[in-house]
Length: 116
Image (cartoon, rainbow, N blue to C red; front, side, top):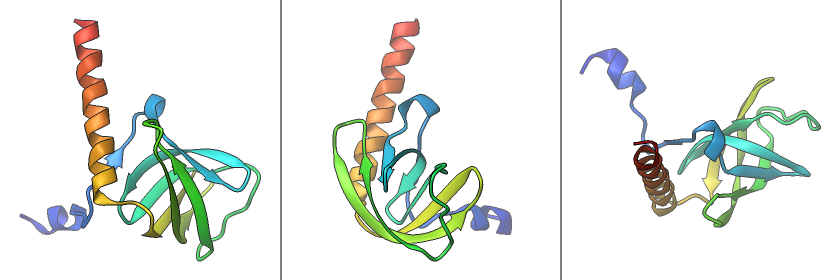
C-alpha cells in the first residue's frame, strides 16, 4: 500500500447516498439532504437560512428513509457554500450504518431486476 492509499483510508465505514435516496438532517427549521454518513461524521447539503460556523456545537435529528430517527450531537468541522460537515460525538452506531448500507444494496438489486 502506498502513502496515497494510506491517506485515503478511513477509521469508519461511510455510507454515500445517491441523490434520490438521501435521508435528511433536521437542523433548526430546515430539512437538509445528507450526502454521506458514518459513525463519527455526517456531510450534508448546506441550508439557506442559517449561517453555520466551524466550531459550533450542534444537536440535530437524522431521519432515515427506513423510518428510523436518531438524534446526533457534534461540532461543525467544515462549512462551505454547498456542503457542511459535522464531527459526530454521539448518535450514530455501526449497526445503523450497516443497516443503511444493506438497505441501499437491496434497493440497487431491486432496481437492476426491475430494469432487466
